[in-house]
Structures are given as structure tokens and as C-alpha cells.
Length: 77
Image 1 (cartoon, rainbow, N blue to C red):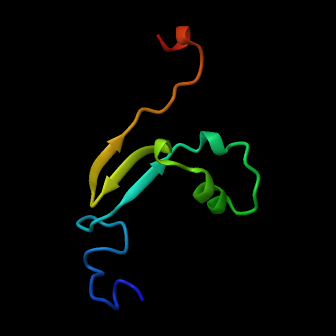
Image 2 (image 1 turned 180 degrees about the horizontal axis):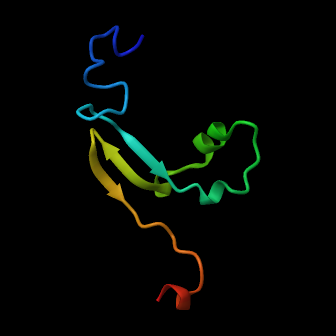
């Protein structure tokens, strides 16, 4: 079943202006050492809510967390 067959393709189903979208952006830093043939499988098993950096629901930004900074404190300040 797809969005066209149920008559909602004008509302959802692709990323376009005017359509509702839920998008989650994750910090994958902890996954850097994971080895698996299927990266998606690793992400599904390993990522948690705390790893969400940005979360949009129906196009509205609900979560925005700053990425961790790398380097020394002196380099950041």
C-alpha cells in the first residue's frame, strides 16, 4: 500500500514543500566502532532517544541539541 493508493499522496510520502514530515537526525558518534554488513540494522539496535540531535514532527522542530564539540577547551574558547 502506498500514499497514492490511499489518497494522501498530496499530504505525505515525500519531502516536498507543503507536505507533513517527521524527520529524526541522530548523532552516530557511538556507532563509529560498530562493524556490521547492514549499517541500518546497527543503527536500529544501538541508537537511543539521547542520540537524537534534531527531531521534526509534521514539519515542526521539537528537539534541537547541540553537537558535542571536539578538541581542547582552549581551542573552543
